[in-house]
Amino acid sequence: MRIVLAVGGARGDALAEELADEGLEVVAHVEPQEVRDAAGDRSARIHEALRDADALVLRASRSALSSEVVAMCDRGAVRIVALGERLSDRRAAQSFGVPEPLALDASGSEIAASARSRTLAAPRDAAPDGRVTVVWGPHGAPGRSTLALALASELAASARVAVVDADSHAPAIAQMLGLPDEAPGFPAACRQADYGLLDGPELTRLSTPVDLGDRVVEVLTGINRPARWPELAHDRVRRVLEATRGWIDETIVDIAAPLEADEEIVSDLDGPRRNAGGLAALESADRVLAVASADPVGIARFVRGWAELRERAPGAEVRVVVNRMRQGPFGLDAGGQVRRALAQLADVDDPFLLPHDVRAVDRAHLAAAPVRPQRRRAGLAHAVARLAATL
View 1 (cartoon, rainbow, N blue to C red):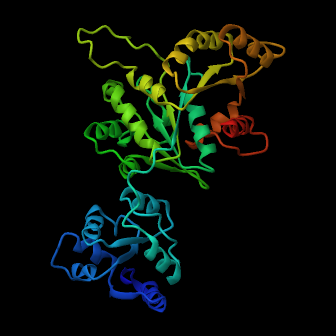
View 2: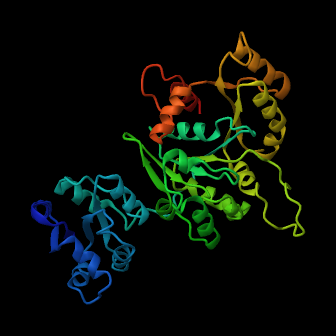
């Protein structure tokens, strides 16, 4: 097997010897920048080397990988074996459909085994087996976005997770995570879906990774101005969420409270509707977490919207979550009162109760991060972890 090695310095020299010991022929040992420069210059010597090569070994970074480099290798049926350990390296490989990078200090035998076994690129149309979970709640800020982020953080410990801000009224995910408003995010994904250009690598390019230390959550931020709500059209949202099934294991979608299909009177019956994106998310959902606030007004609002929610998400498993549980608004046996009220008024048998943990939420807002366990008495974070386990 013939290899073009684009790893510079002493590491590249040592790796060339190791690959030769493994029986691979290094037909060219070049500097990483040479590969990037050669992509636009067909007369460069790197093209000659790639014509005789079976694989290219290089660093998975934006300075080495580009769409031109990938296309150049595709034309010559040359496999790409990427090296890298940082989050940016993994995302660069993902965005170009290149297989998961090996460690920077990978041995010659590991690289040889990878080069022999890998296909040209990671499949861009993976089996659509990811799940979509929509977080909904009535008016009154019951904690939809807080729960969506906390749940995503928990699930990310064992799965690849993305958060989608599909709220067409008051998006909050970007602000809660300290992300820039100008990030392309979900509206850009909706536009790409319209053009038929949306796949896993494109979703990786449009999303923003939030590094939580021991786990990463991908985020598709929402609209940055209220007037942009027409971009979240019904069919666009459905196409994006279908694409996420082949991109990520768990997609958590935060939507707005209104569920009315005809909330606006317009002369054009085919005109856009502000709630269409949220309704499309509910139609696409595998699971819905319906969030109620633990106070008399919050429960009443939830009950009024409950029947319509079930109609809007006919194929989804619906789980009721009561947030901010405390005795104050109810007196003795607050949990029992809430359970009895929901059973009597909404036929909900087993709501999941989340405690009122102001300190945990304040810490999360201060750190621009999801609610996560920070100490032994982190009631809300541990409760969300138990909820995630039941899902």
